[in-house]
Length: 209
Image (cartoon, rainbow, N blue to C red; front, side):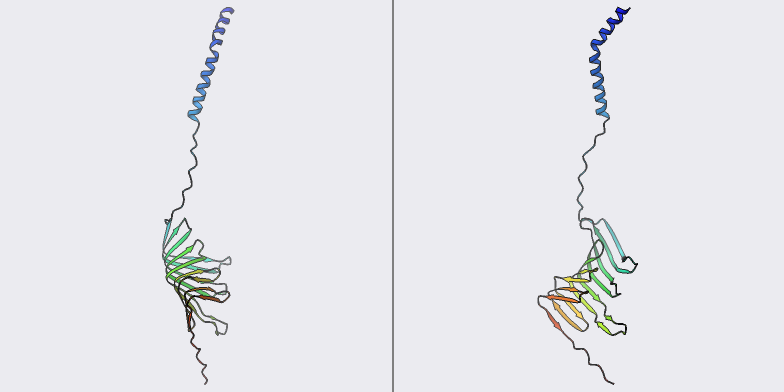
């Protein structure tokens, strides 16, 4: 009996390496079939200059940390472009209030604003108006100021307006024209370049009763 078992074991041991190789081969095949295949990460798709959302007959207001109204932007239609993160506005109107309560309004047939509304470019029939400034006794400190051009670039946070195109400036009763302009409302400085012309109207003499 022992001799038969020994003979059988010897026969099995001859084929044992072959059996082991077969088992390993089956195991490798199973792993290959069941291992998930990770596709290479897709390359990021570049944003195109196509609007990703629209607004119609809208009004957007911004406030400072104390809740004071800083600005309000209105328009007939707005389109946001993700590649430049800008908003194109049709029939844009802007109302800006500085910390002293002084109101500046702006409008244009078309406008282009950055994402936070701190910069707005006005195109075609662009107008920026700063209200007259008076003191507590209602005496005039600064007359009304109006800027007109086919292009005005307004920086609302720094109260600056620039243009590289011909402009018409009306300050009170005085009128100026120039080929380009850089106006700083905080420093009360206006730089005019190119062909600069001005019409100064004398203030009326005070009446004596």
